[in-house]
Amino acid sequence: MSDENNSIFYLPKTIFGSKEWKAMEEREFSMGPDALLDELLNQKTWSNVEILWVIKRMIYFYGRKEDVLSKAPTKRLMKNLNDVLRVFYLIMDKTDPELDDNLRSYITNKLSDATWGINQRTREYLYKLE
Image (cartoon, rainbow, N blue to C red; front, side, top):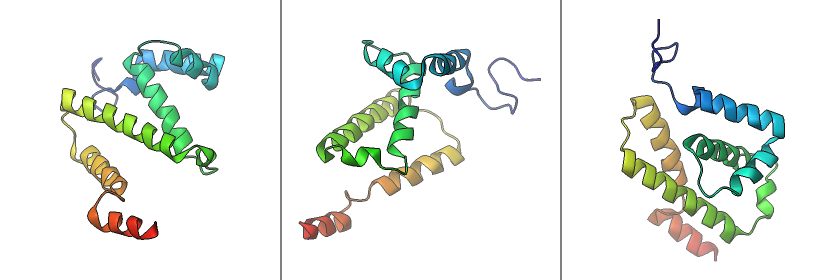
């Protein structure tokens, strides 16, 4: 017996299980992801569901094995990364979420891997490559 704020596993629900998310998925399936993205890009502001849907698309394309984005200019990709990090920074600062240990561990692991190139050892290595 779960109430409306908890999932079947008694964990707090997230945006991904919400009615709004399901409606977004239905829009994606009916009009196609590219058309939906074009529609969102023409809006001035996005809802939380729309923001997460765009992040989900970014994860999909940045994680593809075929490296379609390898043809993009490096400076543009770095700007994209910087923009995403700024958003993440603002959200973490504003909400200061309470995270369970598993999620905190996952975030720590991914951020630790992503620091390659900004610590002194790897920066020195990169300078030597120039």
